[in-house]
Length: 101
Image (cartoon, rainbow, N blue to C red):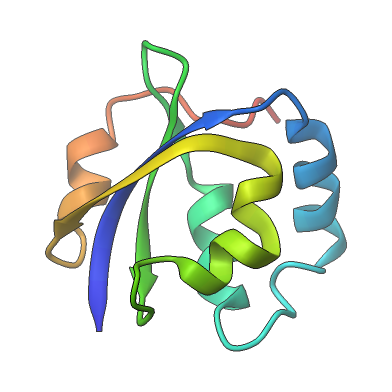
């Protein structure tokens, strides 16, 4: 199992992504839905406008299935940095949440 700190530029359609999260559609995706749902719900907003989050992933290349199913629809310029479990979240915990509930 691998963990990544993900940075991605929202493309302006986050309202639709939020509706998909709230409906449970993303969480129901297999095999990655539960992890992706958690990560996106807890994503943070960097000062440069990029969304950042930690993601657990098993794909090569990283996040391949997640990008095809969800991420490439709502984000551009996606990059990943390998991290230890929890280190990505610790690195971004002071940033404001991506979602304003």
